[in-house]
Length: 541
Image (tube, rainbow, N blue to C red; front, side, top):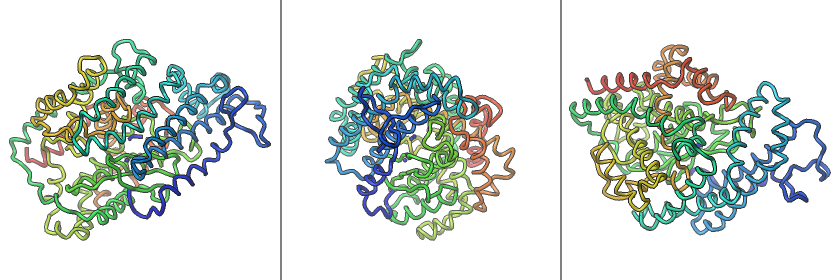
């Protein structure tokens, strides 16, 4: 999850330990005589199960508890953990990841899965399908590789934070080389037919390949480049009024207010800060957002709306599926479609600021003389920039294209990690007409490679495309959504998404879900038409 906070946390360490101690499933784990982790029945003895499906669900509940502990430790590391704790945290994550993998691929789990496949119907059949896909992937990965990656990722995150702050790519390079080596090992274990990238990206977006991603980028690149050129000829937009020394506490209050207004439930979630915004969680009742505060006031605002989109998707899973493999977003592309919907289609709409600009102006009086139209144009300024997460809608996909091409080249050996900064800078100059002056604003800006998330970036552009396709279908059922947004009435919009996307969890495959929700496979037409209409109107083209 994809994959992102500072008010009122009295003791992060106490809360972390309390949360871990509340994982009742972890407390039920025992080491059996055969050395395999397994569920314990009441009285301390392994019960005899009459149903393979029941055994599978109990074992998966324990796997989920370990997943939750790992996610909580990762969240803590990125938000509150002192840097001195990295070695211990790396050991903890290595051990937990090893335990989790061993339990999941154990003979007992596989036997239960085989039996459950014969008896499951309805939602249970969907649950078995999801677990079966995960099993087919996991059994190909040696436990040693899984544990080694988890340990390196914990250490690499701290190395990345330090390297980015010091503009020190050379210091981070050995760690990054190890992570790409692990990615190659993963790909070879998983297997592929055409391109090494295929094995890795399939873990994030089921069924997608390097060839599919190339086709996707080709379908949108030409029209977007043409529109960007037309906008450039229309003259620059001055958004300097949005840059300043904005009080962080007031930003936090405002961003939490708008997140709550659109539908994020703070009774089942919270927001904190992190170097790179993300969203995570360990149940539908506990979803964590993060944002960050920078001189550009839109950074925190749109970062919060983006992560709230992820968060509402996670909160929308049926409670009956909580802590099971059916809960949560079905893929990273679909997840990103929801973060981009709430960030861009809703949050960057004129209607949104008809409702919320007065609140922002009361919070920050320096903006009091701006009209809605002036503010609307400023926050939708189209200009090639260096930082992906703050890029405008039109140039955003060029940022992910750079990362996709570099990942492919490094994995195949066409590019050495040591040459990554120059390759990155040259691609930015070619595609965006700008060149980073430092590696911190270049190839060190993203957290993903330090986590081993290689094969992930194209799903961001997929999410952009899907967001407009889904919005097109939503707009047929929810009449005049802009009028609702302008009045601050988001419930009809959220309800449609809840019914058609969020409540479906992983019951369907990603391709089935988009077909069910929109009546057709992924189609870039709605994205290109939507962007064209919006920006041609904005710039008078």
